[in-house]
Picture 1 (cartoon, rainbow, N blue to C red):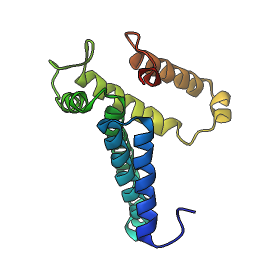
Picture 2: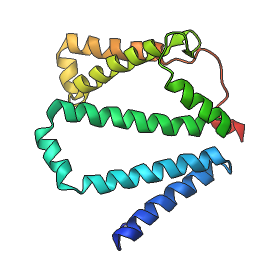
Picture 3: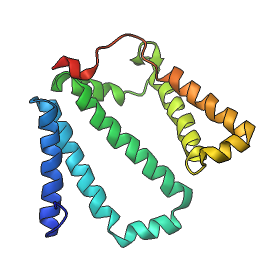
Amino acid sequence: GGSRGTKFMIYRNIFITFLFAGIWHGAAYHFVLWGIWNGIFVSIHRAYSKTSFREFLLIKGGVAYDVACRLSLIFFLGISAIFFRAEDMTKGWAMLSRMFAISPDVPFVGNFSNANFVLLLVVFYFAGVYFYKKPLEDLVKRPVALALFFIMNFIMLLGFSVTESQSFIYFAF
């Protein structure tokens, strides 16, 4: 398989796989960039996960390490999704620049400002931490926790719902 061989061959195979995944989605620069971006960060994650430093942080890092891991995942996936969804590189770079324009005057989606979006992400982060290791069977036994679970999911649906109809991304090809 692709994970047998030297370290160079393993990382080369990861990179090539994601590069081809980007090309497979469409022969446009933004899909190629999406594949390269993911190939680089999956390779970095693989290299990092094999270090003793990671093991040390898992033991000693506690909540701070958990928060940093979750935020970095959201950040890198969010950047990747921008270029996957963009119609071309110009629009991808424009979306990326707007993403980092932290100002209540810069709308993010419709009238939804970046400040509101960040607040919503914080709420969902803590909900994710709370419900992460709780099986659904435990939630059913505790009515308050079950109600909180459904309320958080309902808020998430309202917060991230589409305000206008868009065609499915694969219909654009």
